[in-house]
Length: 541
Image (tube, rainbow, N blue to C red; front, side, top):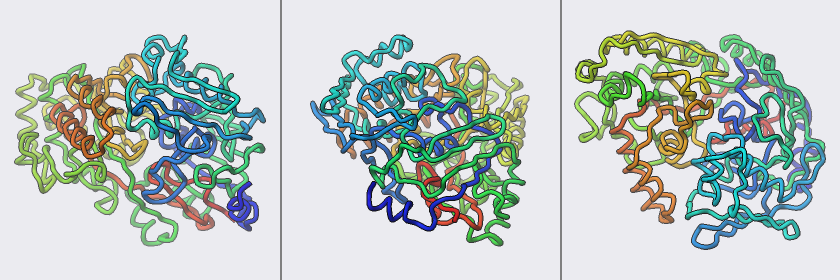
């Protein structure tokens, strides 16, 4: 155990106690290679580890890749086509079994066998991945992954250079699980992990319980620090309004999700010390299905972008202190030219407004709907059934109605909305979603959300919800993967961004900051841009 662990946790008077969390609902499967929700990935970050990770550090440092189960950052060979990792010694899973190189290789194969949402976009460059994507059940990654038990080496061969491969290996879907983990969605069963906590009980209706992993020892205070609390209780079912009150009074220590608009003023004025606001690489947007009416017509998609009152969406989210109008599918800070807007009155994709979004253009939107021949069609908007999203959804339904559609609003449980809108079998036309970066790169928005390889018909794990598959976008994205020069890559991403804007498979609404509310007894508040509040870093006594 490191000296940091002895001083920071075991030797600390703050060690011990129970961290009490609450959420409106569960967030789907406990399978760390499938779940793609911010709510559960926050939990997974203290339960599972990969060869690499994003450190539990605050500020920009939290976005830099560091070694985790690997001893060091990988050696890059053959111009970025080969990556060599060396596994740390002496690490055990929460069931006591030692972590081996075969566990690593099996976990990489399992990404494809279980149909991880990022299998194609993040790990599709591994040699043999094409065969795995075509026939997941028989995935071997032949020629792609080599292991040497004696030296602890894992060698990964790519079909071509991928400048962001370390960032992808640091993402949670590359978690290392025991080699015998079943090759199917684990659902409500938790696989053994290597982090400081383990999930010991879980009910999708009631909540989950995490306790200390008895086999954990701190190998890196940066990558996976030991935790202060002994137990984490995560309860579901409390309405947002009630959750705010419960956290303010100290009945819970933290609540997941967005805070109701009507409580923000009270939180900021009466509970200032309990409120934390920090920027995230995140946005709210409206993906539109480009393969079914009416949004298979590009004019209809442009119409939604022009009609959208982004200032109203900013207000409904909580105001200009925590949100801002957004006209592109990349949040601020990841590409130059953050302020330019094609979807405002007096602008278009050929002549964007350099001073940003000004006002909606409903007259132009109505004209485009008429020109598209889609006026009068039925359109159903799917939103999460939470107070803020339903308020936004009601506004957006009225907007669609004013554009010339027969509009309907369909709220769904937040636990199922994401998977529901991803499945093409549900014929979702338009939906309202939030999206956070997996790591600090435009690829997390332009490639992950619109890449051909991320569309899987009939699957709940088809994160390309719009169904867009554009040859020009694919070609540019592939060129970026093989570009080592950051400035050259940035220029190419700007071309992708411009192309996505013109095709309009989605309507970006607002960029966002995150508002956290914690109990009066919670100390050492600690949050990162990628995984929000770190459950292992806070204390309650």
